[in-house]
Structure formats: C-alpha cells, structure tokens
Amino acid sequence: MNIKINPQNDKHFADGKPTLSASELTVGYKERKKSVNILFERVKFSIYPGDFVCLLGPNGSGKSTLLRIISGIQKPIDGEILIDGKNIAAYDSRELAKKISIVLTEIFDINNASVYSIVSMGRYPHNNWLGILRREDFEIVDNMLKVTDLLQYKDKNFFELSDGIRQKVMIARALAQDTPLILLDEPTAYLDAPSRIEIMHMLRHLAKQFRKSIIVSSHDLDLALQAADKIMLITKEKNIEIDTPEDLVLNGHFETVFNTKEVKFHPQKGIFKKKAEKKITLKIVGSKTEIFWTERALERIGISIRPDKDALGLLQIVKQNNEILWQLNIGTETFTFYSIGELLDYLSRLNFS
Ligand code: ADP
Ligand code: MG
Image 1 (cartoon, helix red, strand yellow):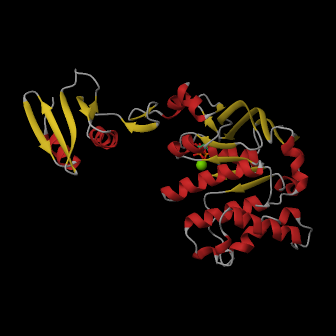
Image 2 (cartoon, protein in one colour; image 1 turned 60 degrees about the horizontal axis):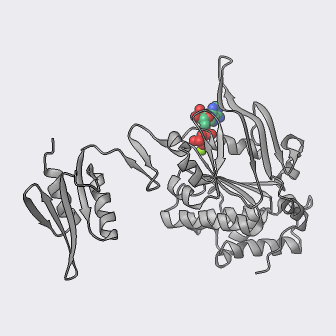
Image 3 (cartoon, helix red, strand yellow; image 1 turned 30 degrees about the horizontal axis):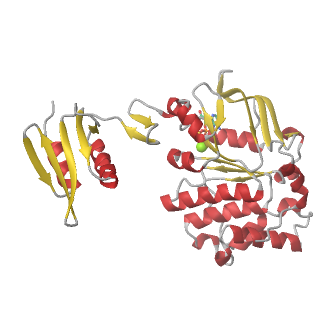
C-alpha cells in the first residue's frame, strides 16, 4: 500500500525525540474559597513517535482534564508542555492544529454530512484561507478512508451509520489532519465488545504504520492491558506512571490504583473480580476449557478452587459419549450433574456455614 504522509512531518519521526513531553506539570481546578482541587502535581512524562498509549485512572481521576491540557484547550496551573520540542503556549491555534488532533466521546451531533466531507475537514489546518482542498489533500483523505476500512461508506450520510463506524470516521478525520499526536477521549465508550477491540487494535496498528503518537483514555482496563504499548496510569498520589502494561501489573501499581473493597485485580489472570463471599474450597479435575468455565461459574457464587487435598470436596469433570458430567464428591457422598447450571443450583442451595 502506498500511503502518503505530509513529508514536512517526516523529520519529526526520524530522530526519536519525544512528540510530547511534560515537566513539573501541575493541573487542577480553582474552587470557590481560594482553594484549589489539584489533580496532578509536578508530573513528568514523554511520549514518542509510534507509541500507542492508554490513559487509565479511576472515574474522576482527571483523564479528560489531562487530554484537554495536552491539547492546549485548558491551561495547567504550572509546568511546561512541549509539542515537538516547542512550548505549547508558543503555538498559534492553526499551527497547533497541525500538531494535535482530538477525537472525543460525543461527536455525533453532526447532521447531514457525508463521511467523505467529514474526513476532509481534517485537512483544513493545512489549507489556505479559502479552505479549498488541493489534489494532495484529496489523496490523503482517500488514503485515510482506505486504512480505516471506510471506503465503502464514503458517500453515506454520517447519521445513517452505526456508532462503531461513526467513531472510525472521526478517527479517519484525525488521521487526515496528519498530526504527530492524536488524542482520543474514551472513543470506545458506547461501542460493543467486538467494535471496541477492533478500534483499539486499529489505533495501535496506525500508530506503528504512520509513526504517530496516539493517546487514548479508556475505562476498559482489560482491553487496555491487552492492546497498549504503554499505559499512562493516574495514581492515587496525583502522579502519572508510564510503563508497559505487564510491568505495571507486576510492580503492583495497577492493583494499587484500581482495587476497591469489593473488587480486586487478580494478577495471575489479568482480570478484576468481585471478592468471594463464601469460603468453600473444591479441588477440580478435568480438561482445561471445562475447568476454566466451571471455575468462573463457581467463583461467581463464592466458591473458590484449591489445588490441594485440603479442599472440602472434589469435583471431577468427565467426558462421556459426547456428554460432559460434573461429579461432585463431598465427604462420602457423590452427586452427578449434567450441566454447570445444575451444579450451581445444587451448590448455591447448600448451607456451608
Ligand atoms: P475523568 O475523565 O478521569 O473521569 P475528569 O478529568 O473529567 O476525570 O475530572 C477530574 C476531576 O476534575 C473531577 O473529579 C472534578 O472534580 C474535576 N473537574 C472536572 N471538570 C471540572 C470543571 N470544569 N470545573 C471544576 N472541576 C472540574
Ligand atoms: Mg473523562
């Protein structure tokens, strides 16, 4: 595929200098009685070309605020932000629009515009004052429709499309803007699981393909852990940690930020789970897939699995003539169930106290 990028931008990608760097950055909101609600205090971070970064933090921790600060929409209390090595305050709005593009969660109040015309809007910062598109602008728009797999929709009206396709259109528009830095605030918030996964992986691929720095805020922790090159984590100490997802899990930062009284992160499985209520233990034997789904169901009703003989009972999952049986031994008794549903029914009626 022959994709054309504004050659002017190429020099920013070659030398490995950060696209974005912040130092001594303090962000917050002034409240009434002269007090200030500080969200980040003296933080420092850098983002490089090709980085696909997920911005994570609990609700209200300041993800949207940080993206507004990085984009220059909002001013920090203190500190410095450099975009391509130049202080953000030194850019005029048109020059800044050549450096940063933004995709927001709610962008769907566009009426009566074709997909093509919306993606074309991305070219405005690069045009003259008449806003007339040149041949190279059309080429870039076509290319971006192609890489986001939207060519078939180009003449469609935006409001006829599904949420997932609309979000892709907004991403194509940001790509057409051809900025070294792309910011997206929860772009997958209203999408179903397949669209969320597709969009996250598409963004990661685009970051690599075009050497863009892409920062996406998300509350989808599992997906961010899977898809991100780096996670930008807002900590309880009003700091920002940037690291590879797996390193943040292993060094405990991830758990510290997201664990609550009720919900705990399980580093061995990479998922969040509600704490078990009951404390019954079973040893379980069978093949991997059956054990996986049985264990999930048991955990939901508060039964945990132990690998050792200290368990209260033994659950054997047996395959017999294309049928799966669950044989439960507790004490001297054996019970047979023909589905996980039956097993759960029985176990949840037992009184284990
Ligand atoms: P997130 O996107 O992580 O949910 P936000 O950036 O929207 O978090 O908000 C972070 C905090 O900043 C909020 O808890 C709120 O207290 C404060 N905040 C956000 N917007 C404003 C505002 N316009 N004025 C005053 N405080 C605000
Ligand atoms: Mg937000």
